[in-house]
Length: 177
Image (tube, rainbow, N blue to C red; front, side, top):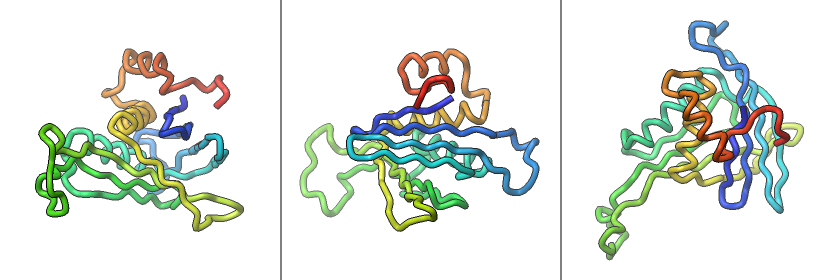
């Protein structure tokens, strides 16, 4: 199953395979196969490899769940063992307490949660070039739901899967990404 997000005109397709429940992990580092594709009118990037450890899948899902449920109060980062994919998470914040803000219109006192997905490009080796995709609340929720699907947790049922497939957020292996 693939995750498909349109992030301000950049199509992100992601597939994580090879995940096993914790009891089945063979060693301290048990890797998942990750396929990542980024497409737009000016970008066509693909990478495939062992980019996330199984424990990192769980950690990333937990960080996103905490952010979505307002348990995260500070800016936090996710940096895996492999540097290809990183995240920075920004919690909901009340801008009335920001000394740099002089006036807040009624009803606009909060910045919603967001996350930066930082992709470091690979070209016969890791480069110093990065792309930062800013995920809003909906994209974070879809990404978290995809990680729950990958983990095969009880928090993810067939009705939710069918809904996300109908929306085009998840698509099956047989479709060309």
